[in-house]
Image (cartoon, one colour):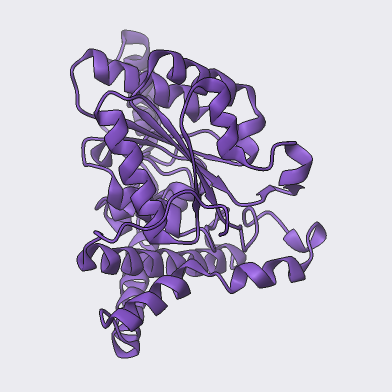
Length: 349
């Protein structure tokens, strides 16, 4: 990308490059399988990240285990990169008893406390003020954690974006905003939802440094996020990173992009596929080979098939789990309601 401000660091270790590639391949295969399952009616909804795998994977590898992540639709996979089990991740899509959210969230809204990923809402941008609040709270407690707030290009036109960046800028919150500019806010092109096509420039109005990076270059994204995270930890405040990419597939399984964009628009982006680009670099560097790639694909396919079979065989969440997580200590009236529910179902509680 000609106007990218951040180039890949030459200090990135080979092990990190290989991890980037393997995770990106895994996520793409996962997306392909989940979209197929949705078309077969085995899950109800899915939000794919086709063409945008570089940013969530690179960010996940660049941050520290103590950091908290506030995702949007296409960043749930950060959890997998941070070690969340695939079976429990998929259980959220099927709403089985293996789902840590107990079947309460719509599909593709994964979160888990154990990997410090916060639940998000389909309402665009609502996670941004939450991330800033968490960052400020961590600083007050003397916690070294920072907040990573993901957003899309469309989110830069909502009120929560203004509130979050303004507050973060004024109070120098240890927060990094990672914006995936994928050119489309569902069916609305970037040119129709903002007059400022360079989203990184919007940060200037709030007193934040704004970085622009090629979002299809996993190594460049990794370098940019590392740089921004270090600034936050050093007390220099927040950074806004615009990752310029393209949503190659539908907004979600409910969307038909052929109704509002031409397939010819995607041709140039297809030539910049983030997985193919990193793969070519690894081949040329002697770090990976076509034979290794074939073995990797077979391993991912086997892993996905096994996980899907396990999850589909699972039972739904227990009905009385409706009363869990409502209060720290269940009040008497909910306790009575729970007992009545169990009695009606012939269960001793």
